[in-house]
Length: 73
Image 1 (cartoon, rainbow, N blue to C red):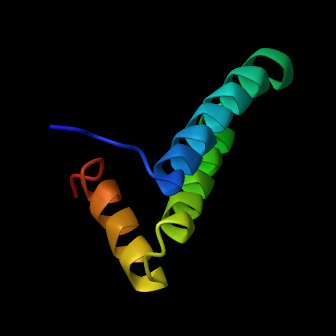
Image 2 (spheres, rainbow, N blue to C red):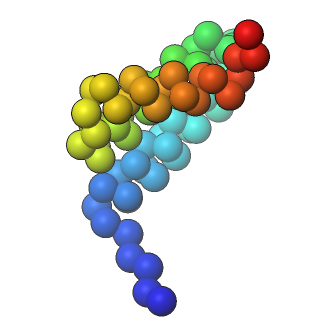
Image 3 (cartoon, helix red, strand yellow):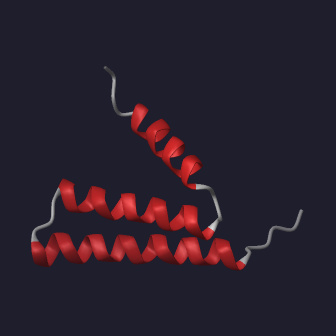
């Protein structure tokens, strides 16, 4: 079975690696904590949704679904 990465896949992986690098830089040199890190992951989710051409509604639904795994109320 041959698996190939599309340009979209490469762009998303590149965005993820960039985000992780930015997080490390922010923590070490700027003292970032959960608010800034959460904002970066939120931005990465929006970026990934745009790259994969997912609708705004689907991006929002997936965000709420993901948050639901952390909220127990």
